[in-house]
Length: 332
Length: 164
Image (cartoon, rainbow over all chains, first blue to last red; front, side):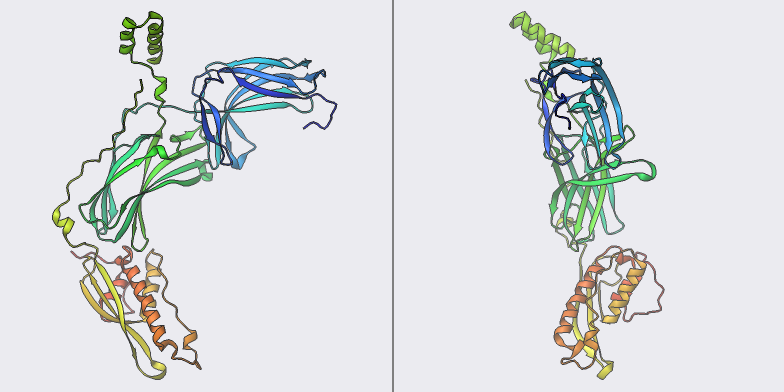
């Protein structure tokens, strides 16, 4: 990095205050590898320390300022030069001057808005990261630390089933039904296929989950389809009146929540594709969109309010009062 | 204390199947045989015809059983009609074997028994794949090919209207 061996350089290290307790999750990087990152939710505070270690002790480090930024940005792979920042916060840690020894700076970004979920896709990436920078005349020294953000939802109020009759005039009529239109990521798709008319020779039937990533706008819209799952639900030739059950566990597949028009830059949508294959390998299919959402982990909830009150009578007041305060906080 | 709920994976309600539907004959019966090759004529004007027999219970076909004689060029005609009028990707026919029609061959050329058998198998596969295609079943040329005594090359192409 530095061609001049007699200059001073520094190493930057960013450490979170709750690094010991905060949960980490696996997230795919652009080259397909999986790595673990700290998990944050919308509204959580991001606080920690920036350690700047001088490489050559005794030498001074002149700088034009030290700062730390919290950035949420969308990066389209075909347009790498332009990062679209939708969250950009900065804290100055030090005014221009010089460092004579290694130092640690505290920082806190309070109740940061993180409106979208982290996403690494085929043509687009949405990421959040901290970036600490020591500005210098010739070249800055900076360090980035990526975090992962999950967006949570609760059970939707309206969650109607999907029920439809489709077919080819006088050849094949089926009625398909899926129990919901909105599924959480660990949900089960329960459904059935009912055959009203079968005049073709069906060999088998499968259900596929297709992920469609859409980037670009107007005439430059680009859809990337990826078949996430293929699940055979019937083997053999059905006749009229037969009903084939469907039970598809989503937890086994790597999926994200449905993302619609994120910051007007991209969408990620999921479709169920029902495919029937006949003896001549002809495929008949019907695609249906489903909405996927992320359910919060159970661990965040403690005892119910009633149970907390009941425990007051039996436990020491300190423990029970804390539990009671916790439930009051949870219900807000 | 965890709140883990076991997902409801019970089957959805469905009507029990009528026993006559369950044990009745399937409504997708369609069988076509290409067999009995006969070489007609003498010398340079010889050609081979095949019997094309069809049995079906699909309502779109007027006759539930039919039997006609067709030659290779009739199959070619059908392929061309379908490629022009329908949106389907028509499967390939067995080869035209032009080399076999050149003079000074050591064998019988296109009237060689093994060649005729090879061609018969290819034609049978071809017609079965076509006849089972829901879009091809709409074309009048297919019905004329399978169920009419001779092919009227001056016919008016078009789609079938379903007869009840």
